[in-house]
Image (tube, rainbow, N blue to C red; front, top):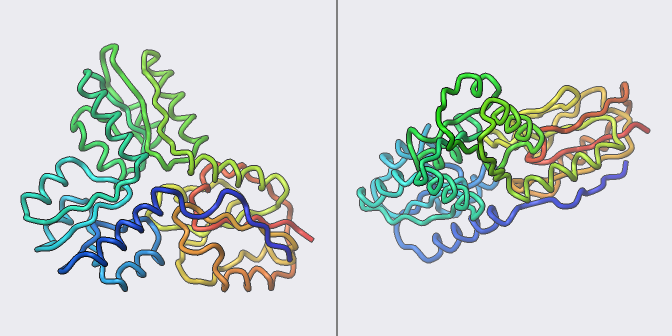
Length: 305
């Protein structure tokens, strides 16, 4: 079996910066250090940070999480937080350190500016994900979170000043479809597509590689927006173990390509490589558009012998 590495791959700049900030804070700080939620949605990386002495405070939302921190330093994750969270951290006497990705910061600034100008903002994002939570806090009541066409149908907006923007880590294709549906409903809507370059480039690279393969296997990073959804023909393994189950139809393959995401903890887990190497038979040939797999922990692209 030949394993090919897709380019680009690995950590994006926002993740690298967040790790550097966390490491520096832990080394330079006396006293407790907490991360308010997973620094990035990767269990391996989070476990490693905890071993270094950075405590994880993981609650349903960031404001609730702050109430569990009694003292010390709190690191805001790469996903960003709302202004209300920043204010509450100061009120509690905590020392805040902001590790928000610069692309997410730009979205916060965009939404705040649109709200000041009187716009209703339709924000395409994943419900329950920390990035939309933070962005919506820039203008409560003015930012309307939509995740699917049904949410768009339920909107009741009036006036000429309507804008549509999005979470930075979504599927490029799904987001374009949803933006189109918003524009169909509100032709006057101004579009600000905020999907980051790292997400887009990794998705496009995976799609290009998928043209030559039969099966795509996605190692899901639970909680991450970039790997939550997948089309028919994509096998998702929602585990964090170093070895990963390969579906029976993938046996006998001779080609696999690994696509680590910007949240991947390691280029290619050794256990996973061993298990792919033992495959013996391939079932029927399948192709997938890979509409929403650009942010998985890794993607295996498997072709029959």
